[in-house]
Length: 201
Image (cartoon, rainbow, N blue to C red; front, side, top):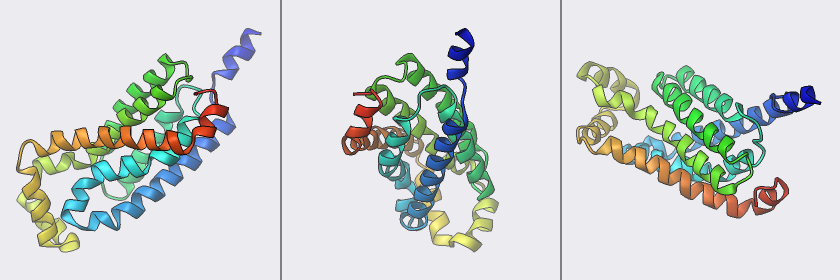
């Protein structure tokens, strides 16, 4: 009996498949938004709010399926690794692991039975998006010049100008959280039936 209980707490093939599917969906959504809105300097900065907000619907469906510790952490790690492979650096992965662990603990504390915990956990996990902007805080002129060849001098200098103001980065962290919070509420409303079926409502 005890073995059955312990095994039910371990991630199985279905859990990994669900995690893989929703990671792919979120990655695709993120890339699509980044390649459109993110091409403008202001749009690039506002991705901190837009990505968490738009991602709220598919991610709330994913959160309604999370019943075991580790699924969200796997999502965050895979997402961070893909961002590294696309040239975004290691910061998002580091932030993803930290916020993912906090979000996992929030879900576990609620015993995976409260929609409010899902929304809060999603909002916390979305703070990891701010990790994508960390390298701008110490961006050198050499780095700006090297990237200008690909992104354009106006684009790079405009964004660097934003981060020359000390309050911009903390504001983006807040944007990530609020975007996730509002996106989570939107996702819950749209996917209310799934939350009922999963016992979260």
